[in-house]
Image (cartoon, rainbow, N blue to C red):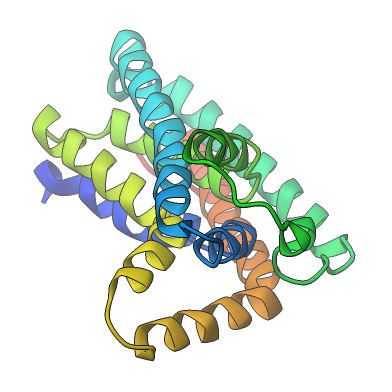
Length: 224
């Protein structure tokens, strides 16, 4: 199981990071524009490019500082990241409810060109303060895992794919024949618009609490 530990980390944290109602709403608007599938595909590639670049940097950094052989550093990172996630969850919980799905994007009339949509995807993911912290936690654990590098690379692909699911799902739904998949996706979008903030807050709070607990157990010697 230790050889697959990177995947064990990537799947649940990737699913938690995928709770991104804003990204899904933005992509639903893009898909609905003239020639929207091209722009939506470029947007999805833009979101994924941020995570791929971040993953490469963190994996190289993790290897250079030898995270698996630095328990004190790992403990400090757990406590710091866990505390930051708890603060972020508290901040989200206190925020007023956001405007409806899409916000200003709903009122956009001109179709976005693919190059503009790619840049929009990059900015959207780079400022995604609910998904990125969870991705950072996952990348730290993937880099520090005892899995072979081939498994770590697969875990990164799984993490990126799951995290960017809100960007890819509308593109795939638009490519399918019939209205069934589109109607199902719109129902999901409506649900995430209503409950996405609560789900994101709960995910951040849960992961933050687990990190703080793990860091505290490491610090006290109960978890080696």
